[in-house]
Image (tube, rainbow, N blue to C red; front, side, top):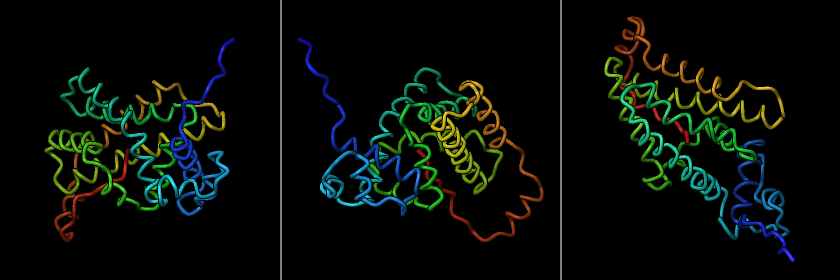
Amino acid sequence: MASSSVSSVSVKEQIILAAERLLAEHGLDGASLRQISAAAGNGNNTAVQYHFGSKQTLIQAIFEYRLRDLNARRDALVDERRPRDVRSWVACHVVPVLEQGERDGSRYLSFVAKLQQHGRRDVLDRLAPELLAPTTRFRTEVGALLAGVPEPLRGHRIARATAFAVHAGAEREQSRARAEQVLPFAAHAGDLLDGIVGFLQAPVSPATLTALDTAPPHAEALSLHP
């Protein structure tokens, strides 16, 4: 007799997925730890506190859960394509983000978009350096290819480009969850890449340079993105 199937999803993973979905839908303050426990199918209302301790630690766990696979995909694309130009680097970094939004049950991009709206960049400080390494590499490589764009505009463009990719992917992720019609993925991704690369490489106008010269010193732009 065939054995009954046993779910391979652990209690901690169930909580992470439930938290990702609820925080994506309702924001950081719109879902309590008790509600997340219930959504994870756990009768114990203190399950989240037992496994994670706090909402802050749970948010960090969501990043850790998703970033390992996402970064592995990025590394594989870099190894395969050996990028040497802006578009190739953007594709290696951004396409895995957009692919994440195509996964059934994933609300990761909507979750990150909510954190961006709340300005929660502090979560990055608690992530292991190896999880941030592909993003650091991307910023360094693309920055070197944008030598004609002065700082802090260069860092600002890279941060805004990655934030745009997350929000565009989140909108598509939400549309797919509602079973709405969307562009074929190849067209969606290609069009976004065209726009992002154009934005990154656009000439800096004299008016912007003048405004930059008269502005006070500004720290390099930093964006929360996966």
